[in-house]
Amino acid sequence: MAQDSFVHKGKRKILVDYLRNRIGISDENVLSAMNEVPRHLFIESIFEDFAYEDRAFPILAHQTISHPSTVAEQSELLQVKEGEKVLEIGTGCGYQTAVLLAMKALVFTVERQKDLFDFSKKKFREMGLYPKFQSFGDGFAGLPTFAPFDKIIVTCGASVLPTELLKQLKVGGKMVIPLGPTDEQVLYRFTKISPTEFEKEEFGAYKFVPMLGNTNL
Image (cartoon, rainbow, N blue to C red):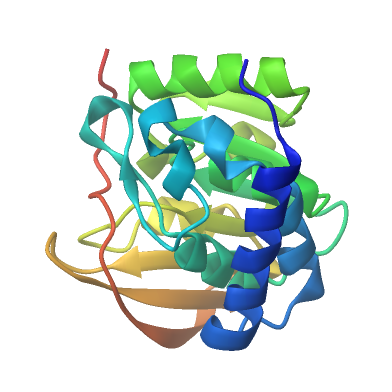
């Protein structure tokens, strides 16, 4: 497996400074996690030299690894506290999962693409990372067996709000999700203020891969 060198660590520090000073990320828990997680290990080696630029890259199953700024912004909006149960919809290559684990969350993660499920599972094992539960399945369904969750993060764009996920959120919990058509989504945060009431906040336009139902072998 590729190594995490002093050069990589130096580039991560530059990235974290960029996230703090240019993007406006102020949650030190997020910044510390971004500084800790070796992003270059989650992408193809041909992109390694550019791993700490604020860029998305293609990964398996025609998906992408999100921009570091997007990962940082979604993670900050979650307001994760140590030991909280976080449901992640869309494991992808595992980078966002690793950031949440570095933030000391208990991560339950779901991926519908078998290639990515297998890749991330192998990657976590190689790196000594331990999500509480990793599932190959339909993200729209969530993980009702393990509900309720303190926080839910959706890393793919949904055309409609997946209400099943809101049901699996604790009262007081938060869900961060991009919603909208395929070409552009708006990032929202829903806070569950009672069993049937939610506060909705909007955080601007983003472009995510679409959220799909069922699974793909």
